[in-house]
Length: 168
Image 1 (cartoon, one colour):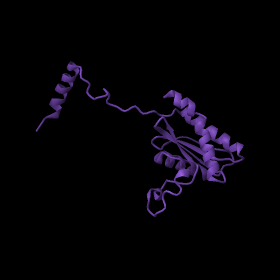
Image 2 (cartoon, helix red, strand yellow):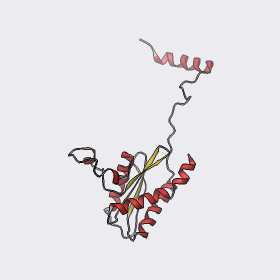
Image 3 (cartoon, one colour):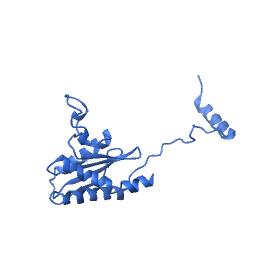
Image 4 (cartoon, one colour):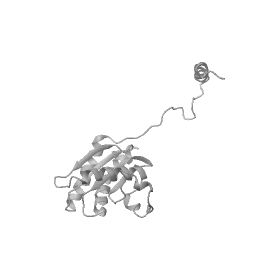
């Protein structure tokens, strides 16, 4: 049986001396883009601004790529329940990497994924996907229709899309 503890230093030394990369791309980690808190805040504020133009007050949550809230805002008259719903919408949109309005007819049988606690299929959530990188999700709740919720979530994303794309 090989003793990897003894073999590893010799192998690493040999690779360093030979000039050959340890891995094909010469890295040992995967770079993952993350939203800055200020960017998440801009998204949330733009979503609220759009919904105010629509005459509704909402809650908005921006989650990171792990589904953890970065920013949660509730407008003055938005119902309390809209805040946890916005979080669930953001998490679901990020998890499925698609706008929730596109999923409403996809899951119709009992005990499918959306029956899991915390997933919501109602429109109002969109993923933050820039250049193929999933950076998180935006969830909006509180408007009279999911269509309006989603319009506001999209407005939040559009407020920063160009800068995120330029940032690479």
